Length: 184
Image (tube, rainbow, N blue to C red; front, top):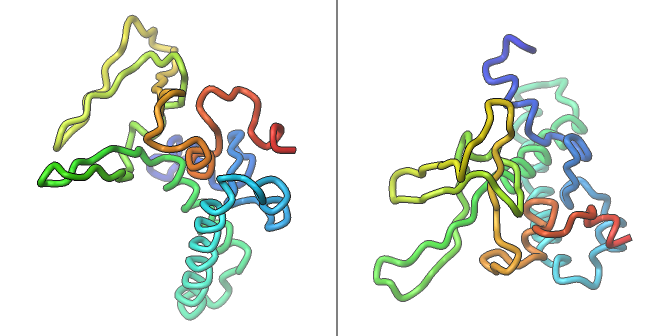
């Protein structure tokens, strides 16, 4: 496995539940979603995400089985769920103004290398976003062995409402207790 290109990076992303402390509604059982989110704002968003993932799992099984006769359904399901969680939890939301300046939409983008930045309410980096590139800057001295942190979203910011933040990233900014513990 160490011969696989970018193996260190691949080990840093959450392919399965609870790996790297990743807690995501995609990995939860239907009963857990109902029990923990049933009456919350996050419920509808979680259900849309889960239905999309279930649809993708069925599609991938239909595509893979004719090509790989001994493909294991559980492994396909785990891979598709892992891929969705990676896309959801590693993407950046950005406000984008329409060409005529009348509306603002939220677009998600995967930004390789920047996606390994962990969230912190006290980040040691800042991002400057331009049309064709992004600049990552240190906010001060950072030692060679210090991890880089970025603030995904300020606690007071509502670009992504907190319930959607949870269903996308698996946590809520500013909440130090794991959300599952709070819900149970």
